[in-house]
Length: 331
Image 1 (cartoon, one colour):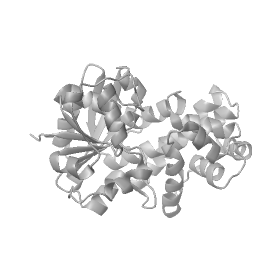
Image 2 (tube, helix red, strand yellow):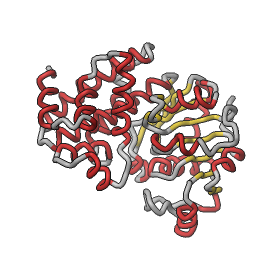
Image 3 (cartoon, helix red, strand yellow):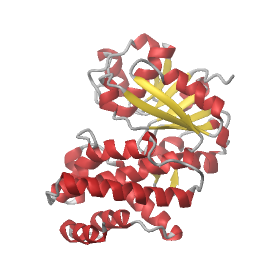
Image 4 (spheres, one colour):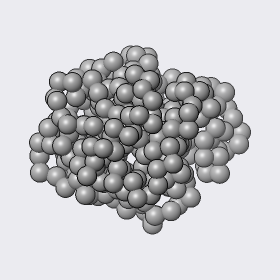
């Protein structure tokens, strides 16, 4: 039976904090890489993350903090990456320690910009991590609700089912239910697409489209997602499973969804830059939209929602005009 060994968190945001809360309740020790020493010192002093999920308190004696990613990688067996996808490359460029023998878990719901690879693909192709040593965490799950210990369901994807099961055993508790899947690529790409569709849902909300239309949008979005997943990784899957459809729905409808908030601001007339500045948090779907558009230029999947969001965010086409064209294509 596979043993996850000593586990470390790589990243300091809200989802990293929520995952740390889950893991440490089971292991009573984690390593934690954060890039800023001042954040680490504030965390130690206040016993909580000073910037995210500040109501979640930790026993600091159970955490080995470091701003040196090499130190953490050397000391820990399982590395849970929870950094924003646009910054993953810059963190990994600091590595002088090889990671191919580590068990890598990605909780990053985005694509590595410029590479147009989901994170497991990036670790495999650039750092030679074997596919059986790569896992991902899929939703539906908002960090804020995990912090509040509201019932949530997570899916762990890994081609090695024993390793997936070992990691789910660490995450499972009275408010986290878990299941396993071998569809790593499908889970990762669906988590990117649901952010794109959430931006679209927000844009439509900002334009005062109602719940009736939002339901049609989501039903078309899951069909679009299914077409893409069947092309990129043609295996037998049910897109109505919670890790696909459920994650799409919670991201498209929830007030906790930063992608939906970002889209709503765009629909209300904010420029992309103004919306990003006011949010002060990264909407992964903004970067994911461009990456997915570039990937689909080679695959030619019919993806009108992706195309509409791309045109609004990157071609500066009027949201009113683009969404009207999109609505005319729906049935």
